[in-house]
Length: 407
Image (cartoon, rainbow, N blue to C red; front, top):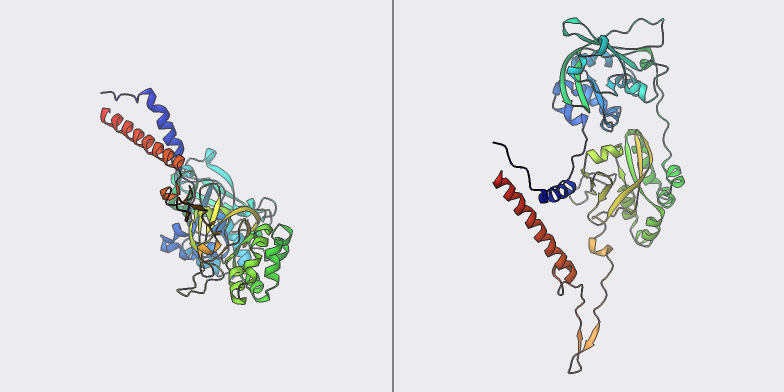
């Protein structure tokens, strides 16, 4: 029996509901996914240590050629520096989607895939590509390319199994041995340190940079943290200027804590912040039960907000996103609960106007927008609109129920 179509008058309501419903947002966390596979803990650890994990998470389409703990041992035995190891592991991250099915359906049996080593510009020439070959009997091999024609051919690695696939965004597959090339194993220089105060001064956060520069110990904490990974949220100059009278009344420890509260001791791209909403610690966090100095990262798909319990700041621009340091501009000073109370930041309500009753005594007039005049801070118009919204919502629910019954 054919199900009846929805009545024509119902279609606008259905379209309205679809338009206002929350949409799914893309995002994955390579570290959390690999954590469910203990045999890949060493590979997972070095993805984090080299900051490749955050680079993987920020990509929309990626394939990770994972190596188990046993296969990682020969690579670690070379005692490569961390920057050089990052280049080698970058060969294991392809900037395209290759699931198990696609690997066995490669056109003409071979494909040249760009790796993160090539895509980020770290590889000289064309040495950052990976040859993928689909052989007979279901065997698939991987081999890194090299610009050095005199160098021996690098050993190839074989497809073992698929660990996780999210078509067509993320594919994690196991290969039998590490990939490498002379270019990837060449000594790599460590990235130049970022001068935080100079960057912020040039990009609209000069007042905040000045406060940091005036506190040598706090600035040292920021600088040293940047070596291992740091995300800074610097408030814009107008926000700091408006907050200065409050800042000047803080104790020396309070000032230091407030400045440190703007540093998150982990590198995080903007995509990473969107994908990993929740409570985060700061440079001010000391582990004590009463000194958490945390805030909550949230996003609605378009903007990212930082909620402290006292204030809510929004990320307005990116000053730098260069692993291991990211600096974002925010529109407000972050105020921790450990130093402020929510009511202290709100403007006092005006005193009610006085009027005389018939006997000449003064009485307080109830403001139109007071809680007594309209519960839940609703005026008469707001209450009417609210009632209309409830009737509208109830009508939609009733119509939908009728359609279900008819169906």
